[in-house]
Image (cartoon, rainbow, N blue to C red; front, side, top):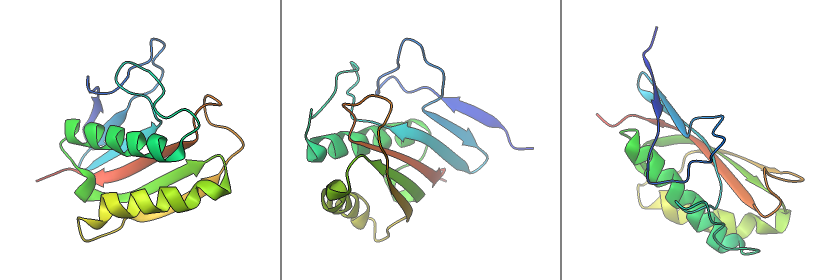
Length: 133
């Protein structure tokens, strides 16, 4: 059985009633929980702005992956949740830029949902990545 390590980075917001892990490292894999557009203080970044929120989400993802001994270059799968279909072009543009510099694009699922954890959140992204060797 693989050893499981809970990743608790101090570089991202930790809610006071924290009922999940930002990431779990198990063997050679890192599983990152869905990330939303909150800065380290818990403040919403980009109210009503899908571009600003998406940028913050991918920054949070980067910080968590690095804390887990991984990185954006080792992401194999992402799931993207958006609250409106017309956000898709912006999210795709940013995702392509983020991953394109590594010469690969991860497998991906995109879904349009009625709401995320708070109505102010417009996008959420989770990921599965390899641990850096």
